[in-house]
Length: 428
Ligand SMILES: CC(C)(COP(=O)(O)OP(=O)(O)OC[C@H]1O[C@@H](n2cnc3c(N)ncnc32)[C@H](O)[C@@H]1OP(=O)(O)O)[C@@H](O)C(=O)NCCC(=O)NCCS
Image 1: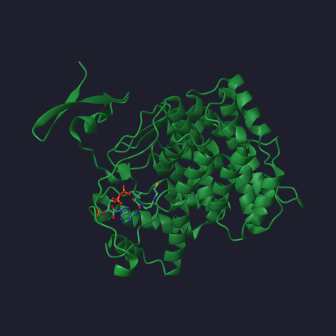
Image 2 (image 1 turned 30 degrees about the vertical axis):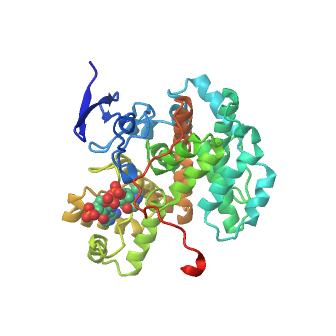
Image 3 (image 1 turned 180 degrees about the vertical axis):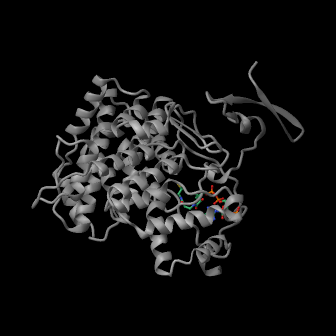
């Protein structure tokens, strides 16, 4: 017999079914709670609430486990190609050679964006944050492909939207940067790999040959894989919620990009470098800044520390820390920011406040340092995260649609005024 839990409310006992996942995660199914009792549950920030059933990513925050479709992140980060991982997340299995060739060629053929999009880009102020540009440009894609607005279109048409998104995001991201620099846009080149092409569009200039460093390509491939999915985080949940109204995939992804932008989510990697620069400019007194982070009257937090689900260590941070050392070593970079980051990590890890609360460096702590070493400006860090996270968002959206999940619509406990009568303006 399947497991149930008993809940006593107002003297009445009701039974609620227990749901168990393939990794033995347990949840209480409260779908009938309100109908049976009139009560709802309250859980701001959804710290204890499962919003869906998902077979994409398994994450065990206590034991630092992260798996995409069953494959450990450590193996994928070491051995796989980012587009292989994108295919895995979206379609459920690693591709065969033939499937991968078809997928890659579809992505490669759609890297160009409509020339009119270039005109939009040119209209942004030179200091526009590239995340704002990216989110708007991705939403604008829906106007160039109006068929994407039909929620009942054929599977092949949906595949095409997903491939277009993966193909065009690096172009839009690199062009957002070029526009900011007021440098000429570089068009994608189809003989290059996904990561090579992005680096080429970011850093090449029409006036001279651009040599792509394989160390940089490998580091970028690893970073994109580490960011590719992270189950029901703020941006993935946003993509699902927007998509649950049957809004098109482009606008759902634009919503995810906006959610990622915040410093408590993907924006943390930019915030880490800004914080390290600030500490350095202030004389590098680590104890002072750690004390500020602990002070409840001070809004300062150590950026890149802490995570909603990882309370012992972030497995991505372990991989990225090693990748960070490798990249700096191979590129011969002696970065004082990295030295400061290492000192800060040591001070915080030994501090009772951080130990008690399970606050460890997360993926953003080191990714900012690698991006800096790769010459990527700090305002582009979150854009890099978005490039990596795109296949995860697409996979989450696809699963939500295929599972026929209902429109996302939480309830609330109302705490405002009770009913009162309108008073005409002259009497107030
Ligand atoms: C990621 C984050 C939003 C998780 O938030 P959360 O799960 O809601 O955890 P809380 O904000 O409730 O934090 C729990 C406790 O740790 C403290 N804390 C959490 N992160 C902290 C940080 N980076 N620096 C100092 N204190 C921190 C909180 O003040 C709180 O203390 P309290 O219990 O005494 O009130 C949070 O750790 C944070 O803001 N980190 C910095 C931003 C960051 O790196 N984000 C990237 C995530 S990948």
